[in-house]
Length: 222
Image 1 (cartoon, rainbow, N blue to C red):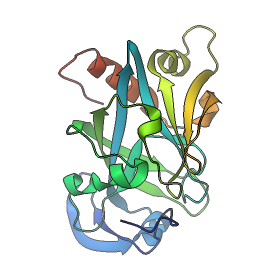
Image 2: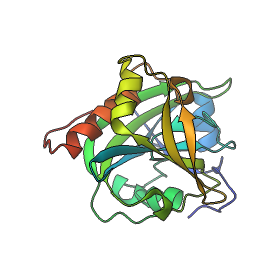
Image 3: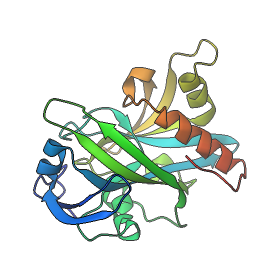
């Protein structure tokens, strides 16, 4: 487990891969990978659930110390694969980031190729294995790591789909928010500008996948 006061270790080694995921046999430190734009592997775990009949999707607000997209809303749990690590081993990120142990296995949704340049000097090229985890526990049951994220938000899924899909006149939604430092729950007003911008409507697609899964669909990809 990484130290509680580190958002990331710039010397952490990643495996370098080709765009199709073929291993290159080389490893490089995180900082050099993001500087040079090398393809590397990551996992994304989206958590969705139900409170009564109300469906929700959990998202995190990234910590200010992150080297990419600090302060923006992001997937529930995300992490790079360390050199030599498997995706199953990388599920350690769930407990490290949000302080829970899953009661079920995450459901594989597919692989996403993502290219991002969040700031000068950062070229982030990832092969992301995307998973969905059903978990209905209350927001207050989580124990997010304040070095990794600022807060954990529970977004009403129907309202989120309306917001991101441009349906009706909705421009904002209200989301219960668990502060990672104080573990207090308040309410936050969220708009489209709070999310990490993507060209592939990633959050919208993940919300659709969560909605389908919670509705009982068995064949879902992203």
